[in-house]
Length: 196
Image 1 (cartoon, rainbow, N blue to C red):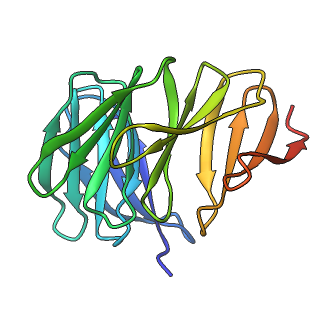
Image 2: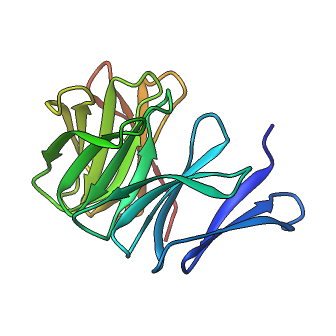
């Protein structure tokens, strides 16, 4: 089990021991504050986005940047495909799918609302996004076509997380409700209240 965590402090990525909090290493290279971090599935790389308008892929062992992607917007969130070959990057209303090996933008599509959260399904076939529109959109990762829209939240949806089998999706919202969605039945399974 990997016991490292990554923390962004301004333009520096700190890798720390999750048990002791001890600093293991630091990754430097962004010119401005970091907006998002994501470990690669292999645990050897980290992707970061920054206000400097770039996404960077870091080799944690060597502390070197192995890829830099120039982005049209600087307020970004990022997540890896389950096989670690692609990145999904969101900014404003755009979803961009980047191929890491050739550093090329493979696909771009737009949501109708400003996006705040993104999660790639464990099987790799879907990407979920959510934001100000109070809804969750499930996209076909390979085409950008809408597969499903889930509604029920009454405020912006700020977080998303798939279960390991990819059959359920959890969403957290400013309406103080966590909703669990069943993808197969295309509806809400349960809602959890208690946050204030």
